[in-house]
Amino acid sequence: MPDIVLATLNAKYIHASFGLRYLLANLGPLRSRTQLLEFDINPRPGDIAEALLAQKPRIVGLGIYIWNVAPTTEVVAILKRIRPDLIVILGGPEVSHETGPQEIVRLADYVITGEADLKFAEVCGQLLERGTPLNRPDGHPLPIGWGEGRGEGLPKIIPAPLPDFAQLTLPYGFYDAQDIAHRILYVEASRGCPFSCEFCLSSLEVPVRAVELPTILNALQRLLDRGAKQFKFVDRTFNLSVPTSRAILEFFLERHQPGNFYHFEMIPDRLPDALREVIARFPAGTLQFEVGIQTFNPQVAALISRRQDYARLADNFHFLRAHTGVHLHADLIVGLPGETVASFGAGFDQLIALRPQEIQVGILKRLRGTPIVRHDAEWEMVYNPQPPYEILQTKLIDFATMQSLRRFARYWDLVGNSGNFVETTPLIWSGGASPFHSFRHWSDWLYARVQRTDAIALSRLMESLFIFLTGEIQLAPKFAAETMWRDYQRGGRRDPPEFLREFLTATDAPRTRDRAAPLKRQARHLAAGENAGLAMPPRLANVRPDV
Ligand code: B12
Ligand code: SF4
Image (tube, rainbow, N blue to C red; front, side, top):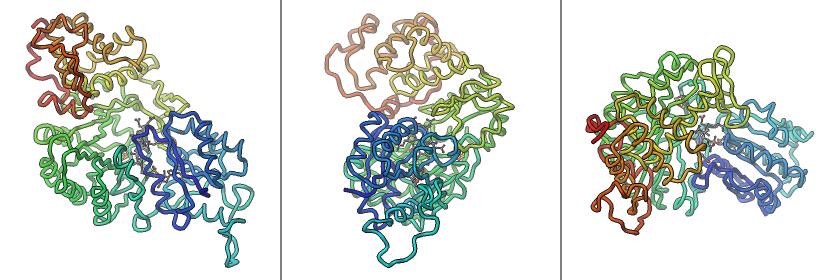
């Protein structure tokens, strides 16, 4: 039985916990006495506690994030009720700041704040030394401060000094064959961010530290040798050091195999020729860039201390869409201080014109520790006290309007991002009106009709969209049906939904029953070829209202 269990609740099964693997890799002699247990957020807290207790550990270390703090609080409460002697150590971004008022912190024995790669091993070593086979055989005195959190010496809140990569054992050997075959593999070439966007936790993570290039390339090579195909870099700004990002991209390009996929988070206004040249050589659909823009309103950007060159950003988007096969995922945030509905909408329209394949419309969250709280009084920021602490209203956007924008974000995900409506989405604004206003009209209309934002079957969503397009904005039914049918087939489906059949000719609709497996989201965008971005295809300018 292990002395230590390291566990966390991931957002979903496919997300492997990278942080815990770092802790495990750096446990030194305690590694062989440690068990890694991962869950997702769906099982009942009682079942998770049962699985942890079944290992009969002396220490349980739990990784706490915004997506799991609520269920993990219940897990800790149960653990301590059943086994009061069990030592519970917490760590992770959610408990690294503002620990004072947190219930989960109250319930636990220790919290190690910050990057605990090395500190966790040190603390466990100290705790296990007491009265165990690990007890100091050499008779040295116990470490200073030992045991205080339990009335025995160690403080309850233990800050971890920032480790340098040179001190760390990399964790990639702890991705097992199952992880490599079925889960997203997180990797990192650097930690920290030099920027200071006030809504973001990474703005506190200075300085930027990088893994030595040969070291990370070796690690990536070993993963490739073991059959890894999908890599998601968690570096906050992958394109910060151009020579390093170029070297990593070159590395992947030289070893590229069909089915390989690489995801990077990029700052949008930094894409010099040295990067453009190598990016353009990747096969279409193999690179994904997550590009935070957050706001197109320069006053709002200044308020939240976000520096951004909008002209360069636009130029880089044009380049990426025209000359590369990169899948672009761009982020905007609703509810920033100083942002109105009109300025958000104008930004959304600007982004549509830049034609990324996906737009993530995020609702502002007040992450613990972030300096955005300095705007609370002036901009009357009201956040939900429950995780993920989303904005409820501001001085400029009241609660009801924020709710409508929240639904807009959700429906945008279902329609604009899903890849199920690549050609159909631009029809929503095909009259030439603002995409934002048109999509908001559809979003409000849809909510009035279905009264929900989740668990909407694709067939119901499609039928609602067809009724909206042909009724509310009066597109010709045959034209709308043919467009939807092309989208539907792009997903690998062969059987038209009942409500479309009367508008499709026999050649449009091969009424077969063979159902191919639906394609992945990015593949549906890719299959749409030239129309895969979100801007209105030029030929649509002429179709309204009755083609
Ligand atoms: C991968 C990731 C995800 C994945 C989920 C991963 C998973 N395992 O389930 C996905 C994409 C689903 C996701 C979603 C979201 N995420 Co996210 N995500 C990340 C990301 C990019 C990488 C995490 C990582 O692996 N880091 C590298 C490792 C080494 O660091 P680490 O995990 O922090 O671990 C270290 C310490 O925290 C600590 N530690 C960790 N566990 C433990 C355990 C113990 C016992 C101890 C002592 C210490 C300890 O030591 C580790 C080693 O140094 C981070 C940003 C980043 N680069 O870190 C954001 C981040 C974690 N996400 C964040 C946010 C806000 C979100 C979203 C709310 C964003 C949104 N959509 O609005 C959503 C929420 C999802 C939901 N369902 O509700 C915030 C976290 C805020 C918080 N308080 O938890 C971060 C930090 C981004 C940011 N800069 O603001 N995310
Ligand atoms: S939003 Fe991006 S650029 Fe800004 S601080 Fe966070 S990681 Fe850095």
